[in-house]
Image (cartoon, rainbow, N blue to C red; front, side, top):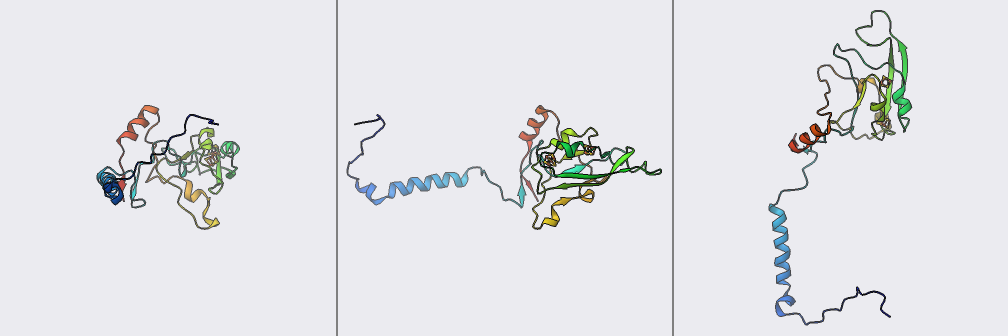
Length: 188
Ligand code: SF4
Ligand code: SF4
Protein backbone atom coordinates (compact mmCIF):
# COMPACT_ATOMS: atom_id res chain seq x y z
CA UNK A 1 0.00 0.00 0.00
CA UNK A 2 1.36 3.42 -0.94
CA UNK A 3 1.20 5.79 2.04
CA UNK A 4 2.35 9.00 0.30
CA UNK A 5 2.91 10.22 -3.24
CA UNK A 6 6.43 11.41 -2.44
CA UNK A 7 8.23 8.28 -3.58
CA UNK A 8 10.40 8.62 -6.67
CA UNK A 9 11.40 6.06 -9.22
CA UNK A 10 15.14 5.35 -9.28
CA UNK A 11 16.81 6.37 -12.52
CA UNK A 12 18.40 3.21 -13.82
CA UNK A 13 19.75 4.65 -17.07
CA UNK A 14 23.29 3.31 -17.63
CA UNK A 15 26.10 5.88 -17.01
CA UNK A 16 27.76 7.43 -20.06
CA UNK A 17 31.51 7.06 -20.60
CA UNK A 18 32.14 10.62 -19.34
CA UNK A 19 30.07 10.00 -16.20
CA UNK A 20 31.97 6.80 -15.56
CA UNK A 21 35.26 8.71 -15.65
CA UNK A 22 33.94 11.19 -12.97
CA UNK A 23 35.66 14.05 -14.87
CA UNK A 24 32.55 16.26 -15.28
CA UNK A 25 31.78 15.84 -11.55
CA UNK A 26 35.38 16.72 -10.58
CA UNK A 27 35.36 19.79 -12.88
CA UNK A 28 32.05 20.95 -11.41
CA UNK A 29 33.39 20.53 -7.86
CA UNK A 30 36.60 22.43 -8.69
CA UNK A 31 34.50 25.22 -10.21
CA UNK A 32 32.56 25.61 -6.96
CA UNK A 33 35.81 25.59 -4.95
CA UNK A 34 37.38 28.27 -7.18
CA UNK A 35 34.25 30.41 -6.98
CA UNK A 36 34.49 30.43 -3.17
CA UNK A 37 38.28 30.95 -3.32
CA UNK A 38 37.87 34.31 -5.05
CA UNK A 39 34.66 35.46 -3.37
CA UNK A 40 34.50 37.69 -0.24
CA UNK A 41 35.30 35.64 2.84
CA UNK A 42 32.70 35.19 5.55
CA UNK A 43 35.36 34.43 8.17
CA UNK A 44 38.21 36.54 9.59
CA UNK A 45 41.66 35.68 10.99
CA UNK A 46 40.76 35.86 14.67
CA UNK A 47 42.45 36.77 17.03
CA UNK A 48 44.87 38.82 14.85
CA UNK A 49 41.82 40.39 13.26
CA UNK A 50 38.62 41.20 15.11
CA UNK A 51 35.22 42.42 14.11
CA UNK A 52 33.32 45.33 15.57
CA UNK A 53 31.18 43.70 18.22
CA UNK A 54 28.24 46.01 17.69
CA UNK A 55 26.99 49.09 19.53
CA UNK A 56 24.81 47.08 21.91
CA UNK A 57 27.23 44.25 22.64
CA UNK A 58 27.30 43.48 26.38
CA UNK A 59 30.88 42.81 27.45
CA UNK A 60 33.25 43.80 30.23
CA UNK A 61 31.62 45.61 33.16
CA UNK A 62 32.74 49.10 34.03
CA UNK A 63 32.03 51.35 37.02
CA UNK A 64 31.79 54.87 35.67
CA UNK A 65 33.18 58.04 37.18
CA UNK A 66 31.56 61.43 36.71
CA UNK A 67 33.11 64.38 34.83
CA UNK A 68 35.14 65.32 37.89
CA UNK A 69 36.53 61.83 38.30
CA UNK A 70 34.38 60.86 41.30
CA UNK A 71 32.96 57.35 41.52
CA UNK A 72 29.27 57.39 40.66
CA UNK A 73 28.29 54.22 42.52
CA UNK A 74 26.50 54.81 45.81
CA UNK A 75 26.40 51.16 46.87
CA UNK A 76 22.61 51.07 46.86
CA UNK A 77 22.63 47.39 45.92
CA UNK A 78 19.95 47.63 43.22
CA UNK A 79 22.22 46.03 40.63
CA UNK A 80 22.87 43.10 42.97
CA UNK A 81 19.13 42.67 43.57
CA UNK A 82 18.39 42.81 39.84
CA UNK A 83 21.10 40.31 38.96
CA UNK A 84 19.49 36.95 38.19
CA UNK A 85 22.80 35.15 38.58
CA UNK A 86 23.65 36.66 41.98
CA UNK A 87 27.01 37.65 40.55
CA UNK A 88 27.37 41.06 42.20
CA UNK A 89 28.40 41.76 45.76
CA UNK A 90 29.52 44.93 47.47
CA UNK A 91 30.42 46.52 50.78
CA UNK A 92 29.02 49.99 51.44
CA UNK A 93 30.89 52.67 53.34
CA UNK A 94 30.22 56.25 54.47
CA UNK A 95 32.15 58.99 52.73
CA UNK A 96 34.54 60.74 55.13
CA UNK A 97 35.17 64.48 55.22
CA UNK A 98 37.75 65.35 52.60
CA UNK A 99 36.77 62.46 50.32
CA UNK A 100 34.27 64.51 48.31
CA UNK A 101 36.67 64.51 45.34
CA UNK A 102 36.69 60.69 45.32
CA UNK A 103 33.04 59.74 45.74
CA UNK A 104 30.05 61.62 44.39
CA UNK A 105 27.52 60.48 46.98
CA UNK A 106 27.66 60.29 50.78
CA UNK A 107 27.73 56.50 50.55
CA UNK A 108 30.05 54.58 48.25
CA UNK A 109 31.16 51.03 47.47
CA UNK A 110 34.28 50.29 49.48
CA UNK A 111 34.31 46.94 47.70
CA UNK A 112 32.42 45.97 44.56
CA UNK A 113 32.82 42.58 42.94
CA UNK A 114 31.39 40.83 39.91
CA UNK A 115 31.79 37.07 39.62
CA UNK A 116 32.36 36.54 35.90
CA UNK A 117 31.86 32.81 36.25
CA UNK A 118 28.25 33.48 37.22
CA UNK A 119 27.52 36.48 35.02
CA UNK A 120 25.33 35.80 32.00
CA UNK A 121 25.81 39.31 30.51
CA UNK A 122 22.10 40.05 30.56
CA UNK A 123 22.63 43.78 31.30
CA UNK A 124 19.97 43.93 34.03
CA UNK A 125 22.47 45.48 36.47
CA UNK A 126 23.00 48.31 34.00
CA UNK A 127 19.27 48.89 33.65
CA UNK A 128 18.66 48.78 37.41
CA UNK A 129 21.32 51.34 38.32
CA UNK A 130 19.78 54.73 39.25
CA UNK A 131 23.17 56.48 39.19
CA UNK A 132 24.31 55.44 35.70
CA UNK A 133 27.30 53.88 37.40
CA UNK A 134 27.53 50.36 36.01
CA UNK A 135 27.72 49.59 32.30
CA UNK A 136 28.61 46.62 30.15
CA UNK A 137 31.13 47.79 27.59
CA UNK A 138 30.19 47.29 23.95
CA UNK A 139 33.84 47.29 22.87
CA UNK A 140 35.59 44.88 25.21
CA UNK A 141 35.35 41.16 25.88
CA UNK A 142 35.89 39.62 29.26
CA UNK A 143 39.15 37.77 28.59
CA UNK A 144 39.44 34.02 28.80
CA UNK A 145 40.42 32.84 32.24
CA UNK A 146 42.31 29.75 33.25
CA UNK A 147 41.89 29.76 37.01
CA UNK A 148 39.10 30.55 39.45
CA UNK A 149 41.23 33.32 41.01
CA UNK A 150 40.85 35.32 37.80
CA UNK A 151 37.05 35.40 37.68
CA UNK A 152 36.20 37.73 40.57
CA UNK A 153 36.53 41.27 39.22
CA UNK A 154 37.10 43.85 41.92
CA UNK A 155 37.15 47.63 41.77
CA UNK A 156 40.72 47.56 40.45
CA UNK A 157 39.41 45.98 37.23
CA UNK A 158 36.04 47.71 37.12
CA UNK A 159 36.44 51.39 37.97
CA UNK A 160 36.93 53.62 34.96
CA UNK A 161 40.34 55.04 34.13
CA UNK A 162 39.98 58.81 33.63
CA UNK A 163 42.67 58.75 30.91
CA UNK A 164 40.70 56.19 28.95
CA UNK A 165 37.05 56.97 29.56
CA UNK A 166 34.36 54.71 28.21
CA UNK A 167 31.80 56.20 25.84
CA UNK A 168 29.00 54.23 24.29
CA UNK A 169 28.96 54.63 20.51
CA UNK A 170 25.23 54.83 20.02
CA UNK A 171 22.05 55.06 22.04
CA UNK A 172 19.22 54.98 19.51
CA UNK A 173 18.27 52.14 17.19
CA UNK A 174 18.98 54.31 14.12
CA UNK A 175 22.45 55.27 15.38
CA UNK A 176 23.19 51.63 16.04
CA UNK A 177 22.10 50.50 12.60
CA UNK A 178 24.22 53.20 10.93
CA UNK A 179 27.28 52.22 12.95
CA UNK A 180 26.81 48.54 12.25
CA UNK A 181 26.74 49.18 8.50
CA UNK A 182 29.89 51.33 8.62
CA UNK A 183 32.10 48.96 10.58
CA UNK A 184 34.77 46.76 9.05
CA UNK A 185 37.14 44.18 10.65
CA UNK A 186 40.01 45.81 12.54
CA UNK A 187 43.60 44.54 12.31
CA UNK A 188 45.73 44.38 15.46
S1 SF4 B 1 25.06 41.36 33.39
FE1 SF4 B 1 23.32 40.26 34.32
S2 SF4 B 1 24.25 38.45 35.23
FE2 SF4 B 1 25.93 39.86 34.79
S3 SF4 B 1 26.25 40.97 36.69
FE3 SF4 B 1 24.82 42.18 35.46
S4 SF4 B 1 22.77 41.52 36.08
FE4 SF4 B 1 24.23 39.99 36.81
S1 SF4 C 1 26.28 50.24 40.47
FE1 SF4 C 1 24.41 51.47 40.55
S2 SF4 C 1 22.81 50.02 41.23
FE2 SF4 C 1 24.79 49.08 41.68
S3 SF4 C 1 25.20 49.66 43.79
FE3 SF4 C 1 26.21 51.18 42.48
S4 SF4 C 1 24.70 52.83 42.29
FE4 SF4 C 1 23.58 51.05 43.05
